[in-house]
Image (tube, rainbow, N blue to C red; front, side, top):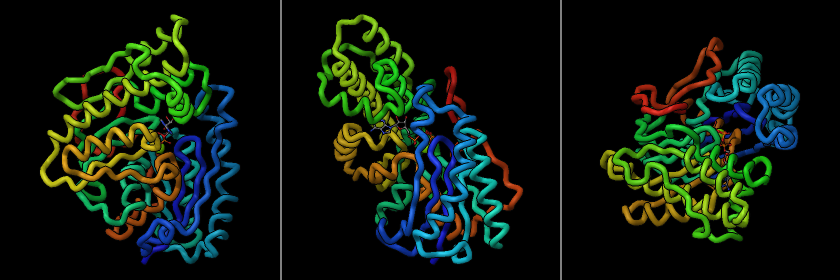
Length: 350
Ligand SMILES: Nc1ncnc2c1ncn2[C@@H]1O[C@H](COP(=O)(O)OP(=O)(O)OP(=O)(O)O)[C@@H](O)[C@H]1O
Ligand SMILES: [Mg+2]
């Protein structure tokens, strides 16, 4: 049994959690968790301002760790290890969480586990569903990433696809901005799309039909902008048409990846912030069923950034004896599959 304190600060959520890896259900495993969103601080700018984010983490994280331990009825000394996000992300915020983790580990004489934030997302479905076993095919769709990976075990990732420009969450956020829906945009676009006609606006499906399962959303975003500028469509119709086009791309790309994946995948898994989108889950469920696989997705609250997934990734690492020294570096970029070949195209993300 291991009790792990998880810390997350790589973007605009400050979060801390206590994880009990001995539990079998989600409620047993997440002993306590807290999340402070900085949405209000960033809203006037229409996106995350790194400097504001880092300063907010400094103010919030220390007291939050004390509060989450109190919620759990436990002391720092009861923890078996401290797991903190060490990247990738906005480097100022990452440093706040990692240095806090180091200080706590040093003060309490506990091992430190430097967690890759993307591994937190990648393993989060296993936190929520104890029956999910390796290997599985993972669609990781968040604010900064859009990838398809084979997950063979902790630290064992093979990237089959990535985006050549924008991430899927970024496309939702930009569409929200174009439609004046504010920040964060994904949930707002999903809500508005429910009221619109997905066939009303003709939008492109970039890369659909291409043999490699990579993604591209920049052209779709430009088309959304032109549709808005035309001034003849309802915003709800634009939102619905955008969401449908984006999902068509994701389903087509994932179908190609399912064909290219190694034998023996136990499930199609979706994680990351956009995995909270109900329409996406529905579309992927149908695709997985066609391939005789279950679709596994964490509960929506575990899809967006949180510290429970960081604590859980830490617990999986701790169980294998993977701990880090206090000299471990914060990393703005940290791909899950360091061997993945670069993809031709501008602005490739990890
Ligand atoms: N219901 C939804 N529908 C569509 N997109 C959503 C939904 N909920 C959240 N998102 C999107 O998910 C993203 C946030 O996810 P997450 O917190 O995992 O990203 P991040 O941490 O900023 O990026 P990364 O994990 O790549 O570093 C945002 O782009 C947001 O708009
Ligand atoms: Mg994230």
